[in-house]
Amino acid sequence: MAFNDIDDQLLKRIKISQLPENGRLLINNTPVEINDTLLADQLSMLSFNPDHNCFGTTLFKFKTGDANSWSISAAEVTITKISTDSPPTVVNAISVVFLEINAADYIIPLTNVFNDPENDPISIAIYNNSNVDLVTVTILDNVLILSLQPDIEGSAKITKRAIANEKSVDEIFSVYINNTDVAPTFNWTQYGTNDFLVH
Image (cartoon, rainbow, N blue to C red; front, top):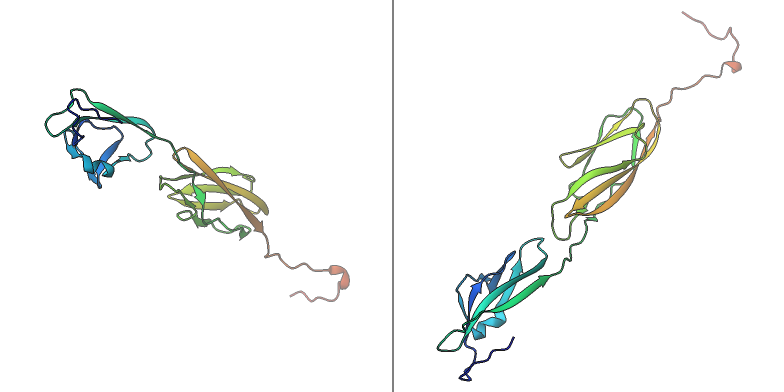
């Protein structure tokens, strides 16, 4: 920006005539208001703090002044913020889950599984369950619940999707259901029919 004065005087001050939208002008972290006068030696401390998750173009206007008068028209500064928003990340992956057949509901807290670099709110949903006949998966109050179908062994892969500000990440974990409490079997061929006394 160039400053020209008909009397060859130096720029001494500016007066804010229009504030930017979607953010605040700051002088040394102090908000600037409409019609505020800023001295020339303060301008190096002038900054713009955009609103959270606000991207695109905005502007502010100001009049320039020497020691005696102000400019008739206002100068304009355009500010463009480019989105650098990152998707959520998996910080604590869920380990493989091993459960006994007909076990009670298994609960997994999700509070510390995902993180968003910009601290945007994160929503978590079940994206895929590879074996719905084996296990039902629900999320309630940031807790994942595994509910087993009765009398079924097998495995499933569960995919959770975390979404923050329209960006997402998936995390997959496996569930194995086994029947380790198997009743003993008896080999009748090793014994004769007279080897047992029934009361």
